[in-house]
Length: 122
Image (tube, rainbow, N blue to C red; front, side, top):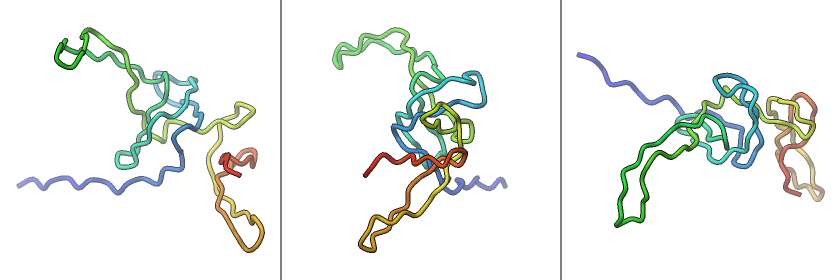
């Protein structure tokens, strides 16, 4: 008797909504876009303007749905995208602990290639 497949453990995703990423692999290789959504359970991200698919919808006057063929983004696996630094270079993400003063410490995301801080909070 076949056993049911267990869901994999949620991936440790360092990307956040609003990050600018570059697609490194696949049919949209080389494209850049902003992250619209992060699905941590499946380990995927939704990138603006990348992995466009056609969605056929039936008209529904009760819900004011026009119907027809609509194009929208599809999810991409996180391993296929890299965060882009301010000079447009793709980089992996690391962490650094910074002291804010008064014994307060904060973990910030940094670009491994340039050392640039990716978190914009002050």
